[in-house]
Image (cartoon, rainbow, N blue to C red; front, side, top):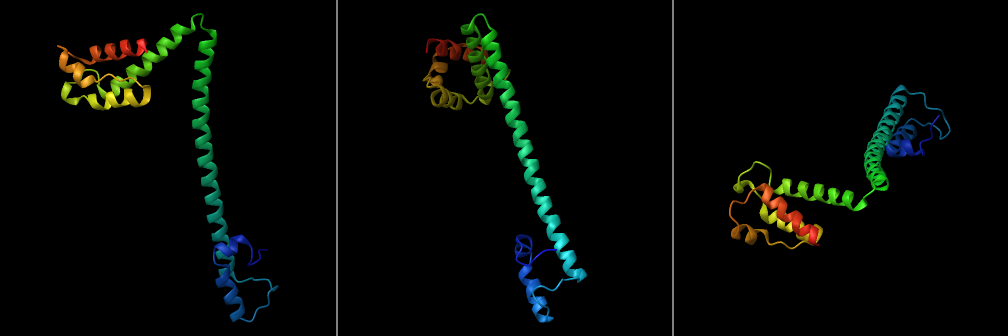
Length: 160
């Protein structure tokens, strides 16, 4: 049995059922056996169950993502702990990070019209406090390509 004051009924039309009961002269503690009302309750329960299922599903997806990230961090941590030369591992990680950043703004095998030098310059300054003024550096260089830009970024990053 379910009361009209129950959250399920309150949210999904309990007031309408209460008006219907008053209109037919039913008392507050009378059992409702009307099929229409029973179907309304079942429908409301299905909606609540679906909503709760969606919440659990989203939580599990979030948990899976967090777990994947945790695995990566612990894998990197263990590699650092097992490494005989920690500085070399950190150097390799830093090189990978900057290579990914350069690749994002200056894709390998691309032409200079496709480059986002201003975006790369901004990302380096904002995220890594590396001021390069890449547009001016490129103007002073000849035969600039992806590799030269990456090498320049890595050289400056190493000095900081």
